[in-house]
Image (cartoon, rainbow over all chains, first blue to last red; front, side, top):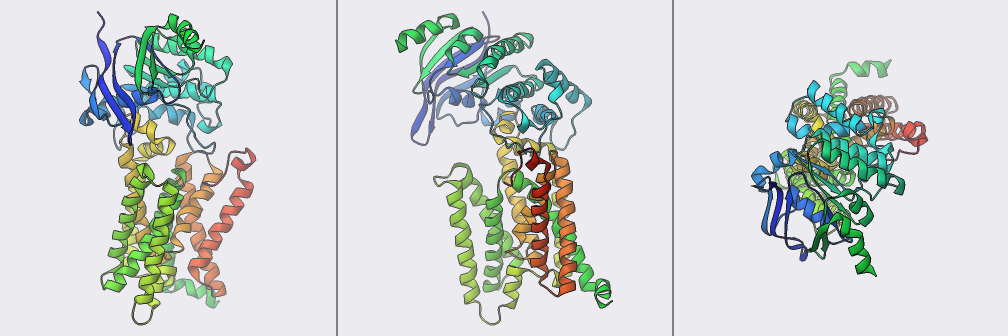
Length: 240
Length: 276
């Protein structure tokens, strides 16, 4: 039996008086590629943020590799979690290059007041190469298309050498042609790096193509848990 | 000829040095304020510092100390308001900005006797800057330059995306508050030389000029410092030549430089510029 990489036990999270997660319990096995499916406001992104410790959990517990996500463990824990956020709103003139962005994933590991070593730079180069964006390395990040930005952010997460990869709505800022390519890319990254991956999306065909298992969420609760191959049928049944 | 001999005078040399030091201090902080989109927070802190100086004069305590307290208080209050307040950040900043200015002018009216000392904190006077103020500016400029060099990569990550920096394990919130506190210190240290009304343009204009010309953060820090020193010296020379107020001339020169940079900016031509 596979070990659990990430677990939520009766987790409650609220924004002000509005609950975003209502007693959510979930187990993700090591090496699994899990999809979180639901409409806007279902609590999917909040779940990812709870795993990262970016939102305070009011009750319940979040565990990563069996370790509770407590304040004192957060910086070290986050260094091993690759996070690709939902579409970034970055000004086109922002003085940050693609290579800078990919290096950023490692800054916490490098430590305060220290310069990146040759090893860190090589790791960033490998991540750029794996995502096919080496030719963009010296371009300003703000000049890239949505698809290129997704690749760069994925390279940033990869350069961190994560154990767990969290992706929030990776298809939200890319054109439909790239969505199919992106599914293949994420699957390739997941397998080549022996990752546990959680992908949040409201794009059912994308998750059905990509994931092993999909969890359905609505109103901050988990409605169902099914193999990815059954997702489209379930969505059709519910909408029809 | 008289104009040339002016530069060998002690007060003019102190003014040139004060321009360099306040230029370095304000321009480095300015890069962080401009790239993190905190411009209005900077305005608010500079006016709170001015109100604090007037409060100090009114209470008979050193104005520099009281302006440091109020600017740090403003920075400490604005951070959480911008982060998670019930008011929108713009509203919170607007309220604090107008309250600071109202308090400053109220205390100015209540001050007994001549107001000339108080008005120095409003308009500044780089030509009468004291030796103590120069030492304070030198210490502040060195400390901020050292912090920028030491924490360059962490600052860069927070400038790019605070949430992403936090998610990768960096203490992004602490860095953000550190920037606000450094802004308060830098503005306070420059206050007696530049004045509460003009200090903010010394923070924003050189950084906004540099932003128009480069896509590299390290270059932006260097260019911003260079522009701040250059505009300071040119402004000072023009004020000596035409016998005009030095602070106002420095600001007008830096504004002209910014407008020139916007006109010829490669970012504008590429459609990616814009002052923030």
